[in-house]
Length: 127
Image (cartoon, rainbow, N blue to C red; front, top):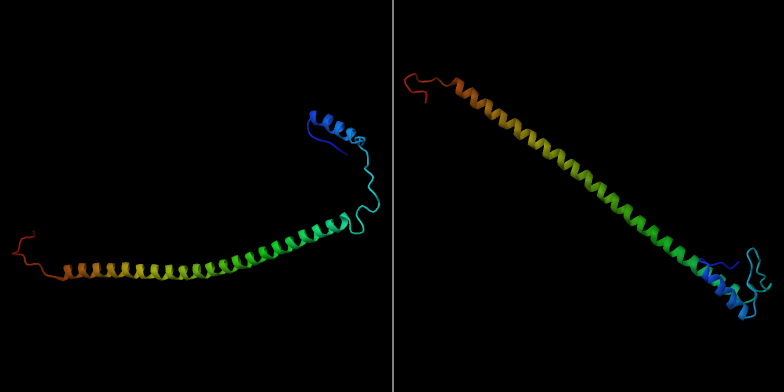
């Protein structure tokens, strides 16, 4: 079946085929090929070779994809391990900050307790 988009090209294709002495196939016609068209070292070998090349390229591309996937999985595992280390470090930093804040509160309470415990000399001015 020969069909092209657009109406202007259809007439030209039909004319070109008729000039060669070939009648233009009509819609629904089946084109008969010789029985040995795809056999005995003809186009079949080229088709088979092309299919084998395409299959080899597909296998190579698949292998490359699997290798890249394995590399990415190793990278993700390394990042997860690094993330775990960062989480542990964050916990340690938060614990240190909490201890420092508690120590500052204890120093403040001690200063308040010292100030209350100190006797004030009534003869000295308040300011």
